[in-house]
Each structure stands twice: as C-alpha cells, then as structure tokens.
Length: 115
Length: 112
Image (cartoon, rainbow over all chains, first blue to last red; front, side, top):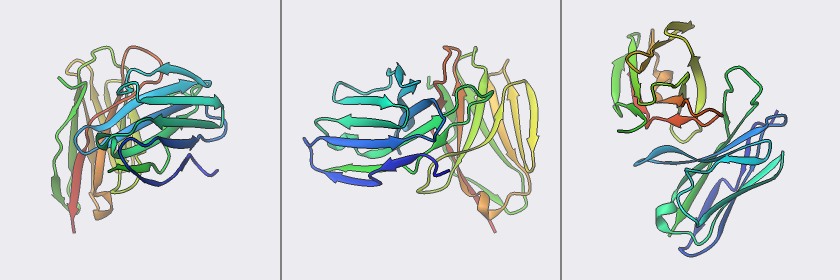
C-alpha cells in the first residue's frame, strides 16, 4: 500500500494567490482529516470527512479556506487568497472508521510558504 | 486552558534511562488517548493508544492513564538515540466522531 499521498510536497507562492493542496487517502479508509502544523500552534485539526461528507469544520480558520472530498479517493484543501500567516505544513490523514481504535495514518505533508 | 497540554521540553535523558512524557487534557468525558511520535521533518506515526485507566505496555513503551486526574503519560524504557523525536499526545473528546485533538508535543533527546 502506498499510504496517504499528498501533493505537492512543497509549495511557495505569493500573497494573494490561490493554493490547492491534494490528498489521496489509503484505499478502504472512509475518514479523512486535514491538519495544519506550525511551531507556534502545533498540530491543528482543520476539517474531517466521513464517507466523503464534511463532519466537523470548526477548525477551518476563516472563509479563505475550503475543503472538498468529491469521492472516496481524493480530497482538496484550497486557500484563496493566501496570506503569509498561512505558511505551515499541511497534513492529510486517513483512518478506517469501523476499527476499534481508528489509528490515523498521516501523509508526508505539504510545506506551504506564502511570501 | 488548552484542550491538551504537554511540556514542550526539550527533555534530555541519557541512553538506557527511562524517559517520562506527560500530558493533561481538559475534557473529562474523553475516552480515547493516543501517543504519536514525529521525527524532524516527518509525519506523525502512532505508537500507543489507551482507553482504560491503568497501564498498557508494548515493548519498551508503557502508556498510563488516570481519568480522574485527566492525565496520560508515556514511559520509554531503555531509551535509545533513535527515540529522539517529538512525542504528541492526542485525545478524542467526548463530542463523538473521530475528531482528535493534539497537544503541542514534547521534544525528547536521548544522549548516547
């Protein structure tokens, strides 16, 4: 199994530009999570989906952030317009929600730098 | 008060010693507790989970849970330099679903 796949691995963009981060969860996993990690705030849950449906988006910072999961094998996190304070590592994770302890498997992350 | 609190460290221990990592949480109804390890520049990976009060052992790792004190800890016996990483405590709150709240992590250094 290839694990959780994220792209791009690194993204450098200028303030005001649109950024789209992509994630492919592990096949068979039906819950998907988007996290943001910074030195100051640690690992923050932005949003999670169960069976492609957004369940909790209370961690999404503001309207500039949006996430979609059009099917079981693909999700996007979009930032429009981007700001320097959005610079962080964004992780996608997936889990099989029918399990007893629901280990989350993390992707390698996307390091975003907004200039 | 943060939902999940950890001492950021760094915690430095000599090789072969016991490393003790601590975590407190605010939601008294939380039921599931996890320890993730994150090497520098890498993604978190699960090393332990615990649901019930008491101790749970897995190899050199022991997780301890005290729900009355809202406290969870991780002990690493016979620490090795390869254990040097950031350890993230994670809690699944009582609100249900699979939402997981992570602490900021404790950096551990094991000196050879």
